[in-house]
Each structure stands twice: as C-alpha cells, then as structure tokens.
Amino acid sequence: MFFTGLVCGLCGKWHSKETLQTVCQDCGRPLLAQYDLLAASAALKKEMLVGREASLWRYREILPLPLDSEPISLGEGWTPLLPAPRFGEKIGLPHVWIKDESRNPTGSFKARGMTAAVSMAKQFGLKALAMASAGNAAGALSAYAARAQIGVHLFMPKETPKSNIIECVAMGADVTLIDGLITDCGKEVIKRKEQEDWFDLSTLKEPYRVEGKKPSATSWQNN
Image 1 (cartoon, helix red, strand yellow):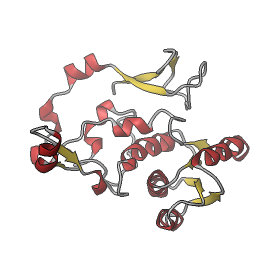
Image 2 (cartoon, one colour):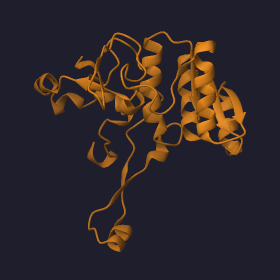
Image 3 (cartoon, helix red, strand yellow):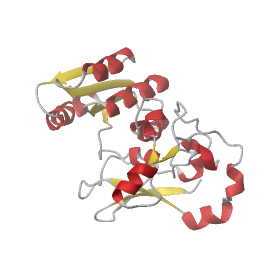
Image 4 (cartoon, one colour):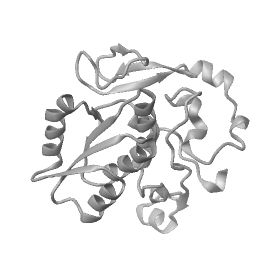
C-alpha cells in the first residue's frame, strides 16, 4: 500500500489518511491523495497487471483503498479508445482518439469517481451520503451506494431530465428537487448535512472522487 496521506492543493497542509477528511482544515480547498511513487515504481512491474480484473481497480496499489478491503465496484473503467481519423483530419491532427466513457456501468465517467469515493465511504463506516447534482453524478452515486448499502440523499434542480431522476429513485436514493440551480442544491446540502449526519460527496467536497478518475485509461486493443 503506497497511499501516504492527503495534502491541500493550495496551501500544502498535510492531512492524515486515517481520519475521514473533507477539505483543507486551514483554507477549505480540495485535498489531493499522495503516494510513495518511488517505492511503488520499485515494487510494481507492468507484468504484474497481466490477468488482473478488467477494471480501474487493477491499479489498486496506487488507489487509496487498503489492499485488504473489497472495493465497491460495478466493473467501471477499461473503456476503449476509438480512432477518429475524419475528425483528426478536420482539425489538422494525424492521430486523434476518443475515449468512450459511455460504456461505464452508469453511462458516464462519473462511475470512475464514485467507485473510489463510495469504497472509501464504506471503509470509514459512513451510513448516509449527500450530494448536489444535475444528472450523471447522481445516477452514479445512487448505483454505487446501493451496492454498498449506504443511504443517499440527492438534491437536484427541478429542471433535471426526468430520466436522471427516475434512475436515482429506482436505485433507492432519496431525491429532493430544488427550484433553482445546482448551486442552490449545494447550499441545501451544506445547510442540512451536519444536522442530518450526512457526508457531503459533492464535487470538490471530499478527496477521493478524483482518485477514481485518475487511473490511466487503457484501451481494449492494447490489453
């Protein structure tokens, strides 16, 4: 395990990985996971990936979840790179590839972030998560929280497409529609999360969603 802790992306303050963290205790900015990459490079070899599961968790030594903990996974990652020669020709680039993230379990790249964030939420024993979202992130959180058996409280603008709302409700999320923008939804989460004992999983409010999006995206052709 090479995960060493969390550091503020702005002021550099160090935060322990052993404690549930949100944002920087000093300046309120997002925290970034840190790894002992020198030790990782010495211990890990490319050949070790052969035969591992076809998901982003194949890279779990450089993800924050302890190696002896089971990730909350739906098979995310491993999406293909598709060549786009005509688009490349149009913009004057000879080699253009498009990453097809629609093949993730919940239909967008948001699944990558949620597998890491919800896995860590489960690791810390959280019982209820909350988030402001206008669509794909809400669907992804609903799916992964359902797999983890963690309660979810979503705040979504009333103008959110019905398909997104139905998706979340079908997976057991408690959905509240707000007459306003996603910023208004976020304010509602902030107002209620301490009183309701919710953990805020909104964008940039916790350190682990970005970790799920980090693993190098591999194509089917190259593996």
